[in-house]
Image (cartoon, rainbow, N blue to C red; front, top):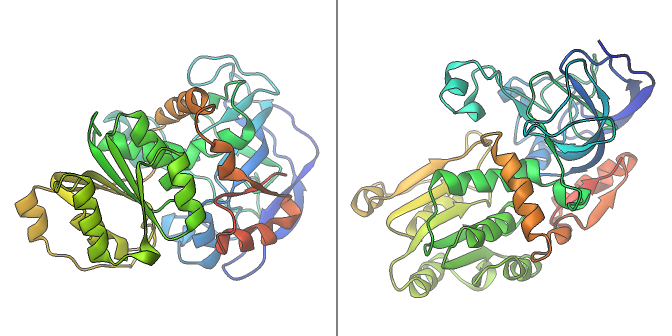
Length: 371
């Protein structure tokens, strides 16, 4: 066990509908294989907002309350546990090294892990699911520290990539990268992205980087549509100026009447799914990422799947190795794409309630907590 001393703050989340409460708690002792991370930036992801409202129940995933929300984060090594010397790519780790890591932790030994499905680990643990009122307390990103468990995957952030850019790597970027890998997006294919929030903008950028011929982004916020163009969208469609039938016709026209090869759903509302399926062409693949609220449904005609040979792929989390590729992507494209605009608004930890209000009202594409 490695000794740590002092205290740190957490933004304690007791239950939906109640404000966050800033508490000062003891810094935990760091056991063998563990790493104490000093959080330098934690974004407010859509799932955090859903949890805040109670529409995404962390208890349904085995979580407990009170807890600490926040998972899309970047930080620096504060304390290294015994036997920890390097990151998951073999790069040396030391106190002060900037790192990112998947916010979920797999056992590496269960049936799914051994089959290469680590994001479906039978013994999966996750940030935001532990109790905040007992050690180690630092179980989510909205805090001064986060305790990374033993055997966790962790990667060094390239010196050229700032915290502002790196913070989105371990959730939004890696998620859409993994989704497009799952459906094997090919050079020259066409892609429609439903939703131009942070995940949608990353999806646009990654699709173009993978060689998509045409990428079409759909949203109803003018600023987000403008950002989608900046991230590489060839065409944008404003849902406030079109009907669902209009959008199907527009996509058909833009794809030589074929329909899209891939549609990515990151709106987070079931109503988008039926429309998205209509945007697909023969052998089209639908990537479903955004709908995480249990119990929501939609109606569709399954014959459209059968006669058009369509496929729907649900994507939850990602293979941890994707995060390393996400950092490479950021380092390579940061001078060509406006990643800095995804985290334009910063809030102190003590102002977290204001930050969530801004995120809820979509005043910022991504609000960030900077402890």
